[in-house]
Length: 252
View 1 (tube, helix red, strand yellow):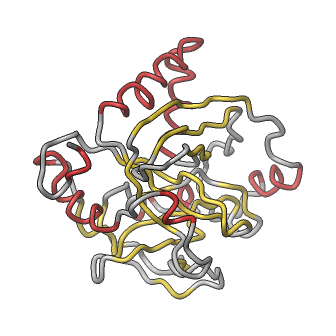
View 2 (cartoon, one colour):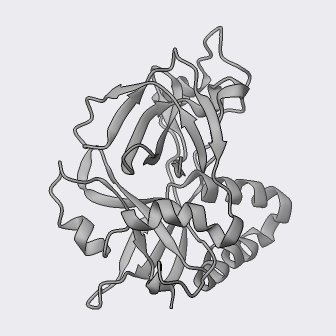
């Protein structure tokens, strides 16, 4: 598992999250949806970079990597891929799946590829801007309708801010990209630090997701949207330390 997007309201499941990862059998991208992550039993909740075993079937979603998870079957956590030796094991799995650049992904046909990993050659700016509107009345109703077997959870917040990165990819002719971030890690960090640091949350947030990332071997997990299959967004971040390596010359 490499990506977990921030949840959205769901009529059937109350709330669901889109998850993406790599199938170890053939090293191919996989998108799993819907997953009501916060409503899963504690023993079935998984973290990013956990190796899990679960039952899936092809989804009606036309994007080629998309599968539906069987929520009636257990999610088995098998192992975890850690960060020893400068994230070597994670890099060995993910780096062969990198696309040359964002433009390469954008040129793909809708049914050809809808998930990818790209290297950020230059991080220009973390954009933070107010996000107005919030959940609709119908969405709020979905979120507050508790089924008898649902655990107690805090009602899902509609984030008041939208986050995006402006950056240059590895295309030497790149004119720059800006894509919204829906990564749960990033949005949850904002929510936690809003309470921890109060009015100083943005300074701390930028230190981590702008200043620190500019010093790392920074990559973005990208994915398309179901309703807008030619539009790419940032669904996750990947930031191993920058090292001199034959297997990763882009960090040099």
